[in-house]
Length: 443
Ligand SMILES: [Zn+2]
Image (cartoon, rainbow, N blue to C red; front, side, top):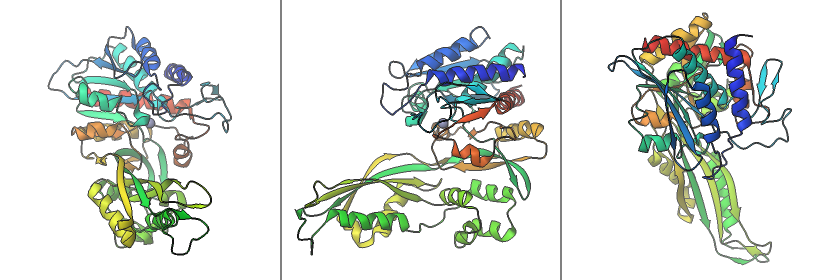
């Protein structure tokens, strides 16, 4: 096994074992255990390190390898150290054990994204100790709280330490999985993400006796129709530049490719795709609404006067909360006046341009490993810390590099799920990719 693979495997195992589980409460996570581990790993390699604590224990670490030319660009590698909660039931290995079995590291965070955070730290240490004197500055930022929206991590830093985290380019999660398409091998680089608008729909009715339902004003009965209307309403397609480029890069049959970028005909294309891909393609081109929580009713013999529905609504880059309100008006029709809508949590969608020096450096580094492949931009339906940097006008991409053992299907099914795991070759390739991009961009 290569020295790099051994180093990054060991660091990843320790990060997994720290179990910085973020359940959304302010005192969970306790990422300070992993920032201390990472600081130990980088100690003595020549980087300058600063720890920031948004709340006791909610630490983020910034390591800085200063460039010689203040006019040269600054590249930031940003990884989160927290993970989502895990139920060991359903796992084949101990989720916090960090076991290495036949070249594969198992555990919560092995894909999201302790693997990348460990690879970034190892790449930074190796670059710093190699004698390389970069013109531009390299930053490695290990942040807390990504899994609860980043308010105590990247979001906090963007608000309180903007100068310290100033960068020209950012690489974070995720991307970097090889895909086999009709046009050849492709590697997705994440350039944008959807925005959220989580809403509570309060459905009002009039309480009454459950023994006399005729003409009753039952909030639960109305809520059922609200749920049906919200989930069944066909929102119009919204085509972004990244989507066009993704479709062009995937080598679909011309008829499918043309339909997929035409709002009027997109369903002709979606219907031709395999189920999993169709779900992703639909999400990346439409405002989606998924009613996921319902609360209401008191007792079997009481007609309820109030039922709350929580809806997970996601906006495509270019869409705003105005589009969400318009969606409620049209989807609910006459029922709109029977409900109140409260926005519980919101965030804008974001997208970085693709014609940047960072894109070119990533493409060169990835195709040096996979000469037959080509990088294509992708969007993600979920949220990442990249959005804080995009909001500051900084191009931010999600990128790693996985081995041929990792399929896109397997990869996407492991996020926040059971049996999260990564092979050591993918860890080594990711370290090499980050190193190559930094040398390309900052030398
Ligand atoms: Zn993540």
